[in-house]
Image (cartoon, rainbow, N blue to C red):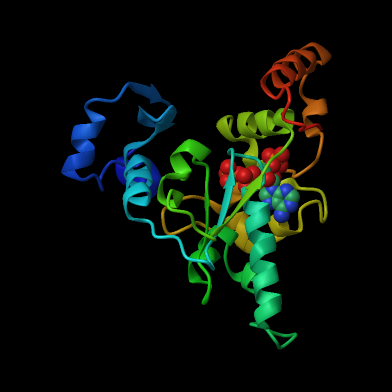
Length: 233
Ligand SMILES: Nc1ncnc2c1ncn2[C@@H]1O[C@H](COP(=O)(O)OS(=O)(=O)O)[C@@H](OP(=O)(O)O)[C@H]1O
């Protein structure tokens, strides 16, 4: 694929000299879209890594900032849509019943940067990478959304195999947001199709795709990793 056709975050055209030098010292791998680099235990495309470094060095949290944090495919888009809906309701931004709700005019990820009085953004950075700008304490809100690992796994697998396009044949009102025209056909300014964020949104959909043996194996790993955390599904 031509680099210009890639989503901005996957390209390598925004990299500072300092980051280039850092990249040359990082472990490198390749996935189906291009080179990825291991920074603080996670793999990043070059532009995404630049964004992470910019955030770590330059982000100055404010009291009204809201950061939605999650592992990929855990419900980040859903929580962002809910936050925007709350914001719109509290600020009465669309007072006329005829007015198009902002969520009908753009994808939640496209709308979030344009909220007037708060900064709302989402990230998949792990805690140890995310916490850098908060060392000197801040009242900025970080909302972490967590989802059953087996649903996350299947959602991710569907994305990789391209079946997120099933959004077009979604059963009626399964995910209201996914049914919106803007989320079916729209594309973000960074080249990302809106539809990659929507598929079924069904709790327990993994049951239709994982064998009991697979499920059991994942359950054992999760139990081992989360021993003592109190998290249960
Ligand atoms: N509004 C709403 N309601 C219910 N479910 C929703 C909604 N928006 C997104 N989704 C489902 O969330 C899954 C995608 O998760 P993320 O938004 O975290 O994905 S991403 O990592 O930011 O790309 C993905 O889950 P799966 O359907 O299981 O694949 C989406 O379909």
